[in-house]
Length: 111
Length: 112
Image (cartoon, rainbow over all chains, first blue to last red; front, side, top):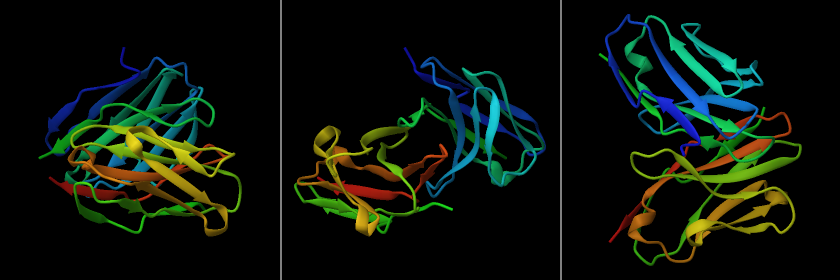
């Protein structure tokens, strides 16, 4: 059973397109996150939701819009994709102050 | 604002060598500390964590870390590394506000 699953695993698209990444967790956690890992492996938080409520919104272009239909799901929609958006995007979840549980990542390549 | 600093960006060791990766954080309140490992092509996995109690914590695969409050440090150690330890290592801090902040990571390469 995959605890945090995100789809797709790979996403190759052209500049200007709009794409979405989906994430689901079956751990019963209240908090979910999106992280971006760039080519240098730096890991930066983008958003966090707690029980469907946005609680962390870092300095991210407004082309990125998270949506949480329920506490088990956190999707990421990206409008007008740019070359610099190419990265690996990780979804994660956490219950209370416990460690983060990460998904397997979505490798986004914008051409 | 909290921050996490990992001093070693790339460490190269031979098998059986000892490892110590530095991690310092800046935050004045109560923190929970973590080390995560990311094997090539994979997602981050928890190595070990510190919440309270004994400042020397042991994790999986022979790793341990020591929390030194006065130095705001949480260094990761392993007495004898293996080729399979080649990975990216991230130190992270959770604050009471629920935010997780990661260091920039350390790439460990172990030569067979």
